[in-house]
Image (tube, rainbow, N blue to C red):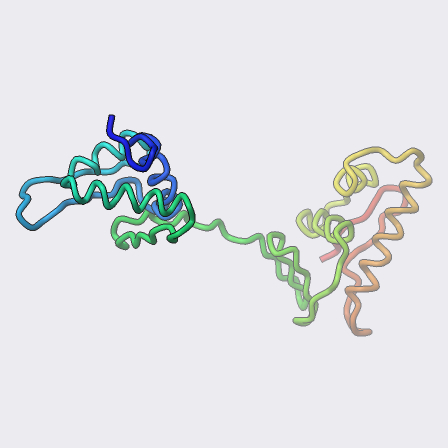
Length: 205
């Protein structure tokens, strides 16, 4: 087993592959060939393989002087005397982009809601809802005209039962009241949220 600067070839190749691995994530396989006086040498590097397997393939392409130079480069990289290589993957070799699922967007009159961006706008003005206010509003607007009971609202916002019904109702009423106030940025804005006495709340549009 060859030695380079006190380290065996396996150690050197593990360090080399580690230095380039983050730059290869866009491709499954990299083909490397050499020209000049050497004909017919080609290595296909599969990044799912371990460092030793990749190293042996690439090492076989190099002559003795190139092997020594590469070994020295890896040692320099390990000692942070050089930067890790930047490998540009051709566009045709890049993995296809995963399609981004469409956002959950709801437009009701002057009101706009986007679940993924956690955004609520009224007449293009963003409404600054707290996390709990947004979660409560999300439950109502994604179940339009359906009555959401106090228990359903509690479970959606907090995920647990309140210690008393009185405290639960008070907390929900306070949240809904703040949401209604924030949405009504102008006097002619309608009330989007309606209380259903003794049961819960619903989005009224």
